[in-house]
Length: 475
Image (cartoon, rainbow, N blue to C red):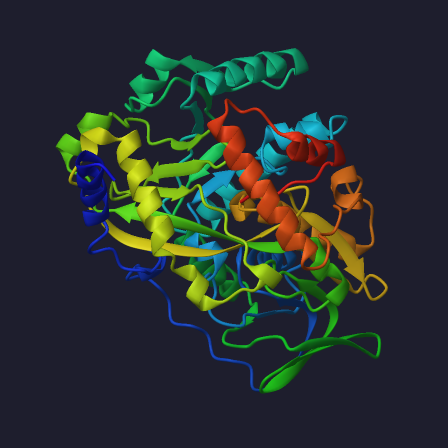
């Protein structure tokens, strides 16, 4: 390595010297105490398994639909400790992991899906206000930025297509000068600014606020209570826990990345580890240097993309790029920390914002995301309609999990609704193959995506074949 390159590497690795390997959001001093574990037996009308966004929204919406319904929520560790408390805090209206994915998979439904997604985001904003959830909710929008010339042309072509399809409302195309006026990076060559469809928030505070709202409405929440198995019991279902059991008329499984109690659902998802850094608070001078006046979220347009945003105290969260899948789909605590990815992210951060030289990172962390072959949630029922489930949000679940909660409640009701009529809800993605084929295919796809980024976006034969089959791998 040349001396100048070694010097630059020393500069950005030095920025990580004091970074704590813990999620910034979960260190908030307002973190609530966990609820006691279940001991003994309990009965209810609806049992929700999982204390992330998916389970919390299901419990809350169930009580708001029917205040007399007895609802119990089980969480194996603590509410919001996994993906719901570790993500970037991008709360998007999209239900389909972005408009390109939705248009490719459900062209006949895309206008309806966009309408339902925007309504869902409005309802999240209303629920945050109604329940007094202090989660630093800011409806600032998001800019997809191009950092290569070919990406700028792709954004222009995509915006033209959105206009032709009648889907460009609220989405503005920015040239290099316009996007750098919003956020000053020498790497930005163009941008698509979605002004209404994305909000920024504190992800852990949203989870904790939803928990408090559930408790206030009478939901019984048990933490440190893993669900061990699920069985039919008379006219309902029973779930066993380490110190007790719950009998319920209906059950919602909202465990996402963790093994589903329905074994046949497990093949539809694989765990992907995503990583993020958080800087120290920026000074007024540093903020002025990057000109981030409107506090939008940002993401770049590469296959191996970064996402970044400002926190309420003016830190920059910088995440993404690596999407790490471990052989066998294992989910382990030790995978949450990955220094080689932190070093890579730090280098990319200072390439994007060279004017922030000297800024240090205070936190570096990772966590698992459940992805499926179509990148967006899928749904289903079991045990003669007494059990409903949703999974596969692929990193865009901050907003879409609320929609998924309503889908699961609709499915349990047995009544057809505007949600259950959707092809997206009625059909499932293709499952992943068993090992070693899953790991081999994912590794080849990741290599191909990195190669495409390095060669002007040109997709090789493998990626083109995956495109034709509607398969993929993403974080």
